[in-house]
Image 1 (cartoon, rainbow, N blue to C red):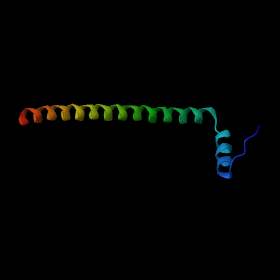
Image 2 (image 1 turned 90 degrees about the horizontal axis):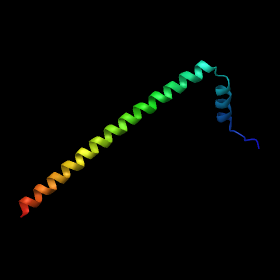
Image 3 (image 1 turned 180 degrees about the horizontal axis):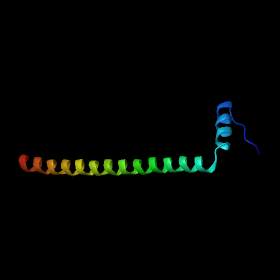
Image 4 (image 1 turned 180 degrees about the vertical axis):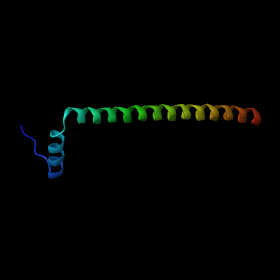
Length: 68
């Protein structure tokens, strides 16, 4: 079964078909680099969130002591 593409998708597909292997490799490396940076950023955000959650727990415990 053949898929039909809109004109913008068709021009994109035509552009992609005209890439040589070195261009494809460069794009692949760029995407890999972006993905790696995003993973590092996500891990940093996860670590920061964990720190904030730990701090909230500490403050809640301190509040319980003060209320007693």
